[in-house]
Each structure stands twice: as C-alpha cells, then as structure tokens.
Amino acid sequence: MKYIFPFLFSAVLFCSCNDEKKPVTQQQEIIKKYISDNHLNVTPTGTGLYYIIDEAGSGAQPKASSKVTVAYKGYFVDGKVFDESGPEGITFGLDEVIKGWTDGIPYFKKGGKGKLIIPADLGYGTEDYNGIPGNSVLIFDIKLIDVL
Image (cartoon, rainbow, N blue to C red; front, side, top):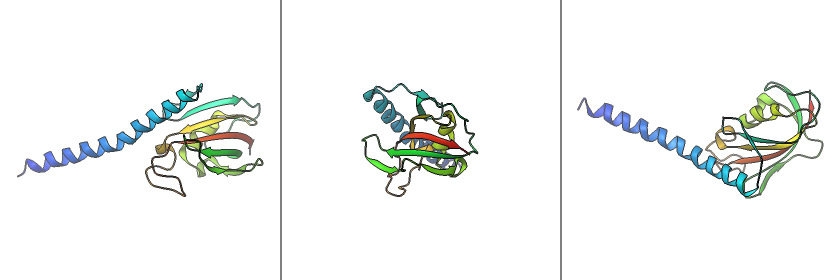
C-alpha cells in the first residue's frame, strides 16, 4: 500500500501537467494557422505572444509599468469583434491589464500602430470572461496614442 500512493500521486501530477500544456499547444497551432492564412509577418516574443508593428511611431516607448492611451479593436481568429475603443482610445496603466498587453504594448512607440496576437495564458486564461470563452486566442489591432 505504501508504494501505491507515490505511484498515484505521480500519475495525477503527470496527467495534470499534460492537460495544462495541451491547450497551450493547441493555441500555438491556432495562432500559427492564423498567421499563415493571413500572410502575416510577425515577431514572436518567446512567451507565446506575437506582435506586428505596422507603423513604428516616433514618440516615447512605454515600460510595463507605464500609463498609456490606446485605441484598439479586439477580436477572435474568426474575425468576430469582442471589444473596441473609440478613436480617442482609453487610458490605463499597463500593470492593470492582461499580461499580453503588459508585455506587448511596450514594443510600440507613441504614435505606433500594429497588432498583438495573444494566447489565452497571456489573456483571460481558461475561464470564460465577459463573453470571451476560456482558452481563447485574442487579436488586437492597436494604436498607441500616448505614453503618460
């Protein structure tokens, strides 16, 4: 009996880790297909986040702790929009938003435009959130209006 517990614990641990990695692998496959289907020239960050800079901008470049104003449109890989700001954008601290924005927006300079492709683990995770299904890949067209 004393040998069964470590075996069961190891089996549960192995299965749990395997299940956690499966959605990440599936999301990366979805992201790679989206990139390929749309002929996008992306830059990977190594965390699963991809970004595209369409216009470099010429102003200040934010840090992960900066307050910024961003105009954006958020949508899924099927093109369905789930959120959008007005052209004036919204102002927030980069430490108050999803990790994909905290990590991704600092690649842009004030006045810059581009796209962030964010896997769920850098977005809203595995749980449904405000109409966004769990494990969703999120895409954002962004314009960095200001760095405050």
